[in-house]
Image 1: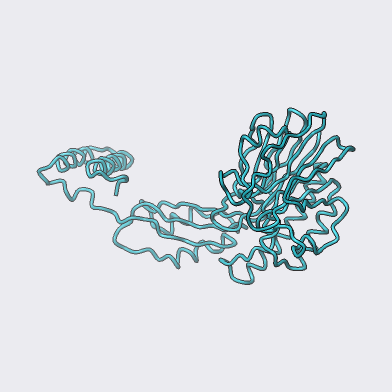
Image 2: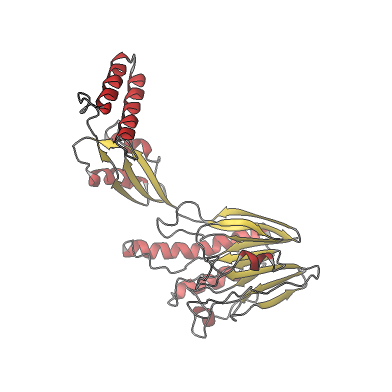
Length: 364
């Protein structure tokens, strides 16, 4: 049985254009710290293999501090490290990968076709291939089948499961026919799997650190064990900050009160986008004031207005129509309600009924 860690899509030295320059620089520094958390996890778990499935770098321009951190962190891992360059960090003689003398425990795949690395001391074989340009349309796994030699067979590859993709297409059929025990894939920034195709287990760990509100929640790597016929890989969060979207309903309360109740105690390390929802009257929302209220509670926060104007629920009650008949009946029920909870329930029912009569998706 092998202990394995699977990571991908670090995008080191991403520009973080949405942030002020000082915070962007801070985020890049935090990405370097992420490498050492990865190394600590690998050594703590006694990982035999660390499989990194491409896009370690966001592009070809890399800060010297980042290369130094990568060399030091990966070199401190007691297990073997395998890297399959992707479309953002493709292999070339001028790529950052060619700029360092890598530690002995680090193997970088440099060929566009599958390479094979035998590890007899671990009873396993690792296969991998590199992007050698920003695009590739060939199915590198097509027709491949690992030998039935009693060894554990693993793949590390940057690949896209979308048919006809120009980012290294890979199919369920390719995986099912491969004879691999585990396929460590990269490119998709959301975690997928582990899943099974035939006897092969495959997974995308997602990116280990979000970079925007299209990469929400906890981010990290997969960690577990691989043996013939049995793969157990679990998600381990590694990110220092998360991107979160929170909805705050201001229908029945003052916006400041509703927002204050939704804020965390103390200061969160996360990025948060707060969406104000529900109904409001004719008065506007002071978004700058609300954002100032939320700012001490997050590393970075924005507040957006997604509310809708409150419609006068009973405005059509006197019409000689089915709508008017319905509203008059609901208004009588409202008058008969014995407490605030019952009145609120009647009003909600009236709004949903009015929406149905007016053929709207949502009550106003």
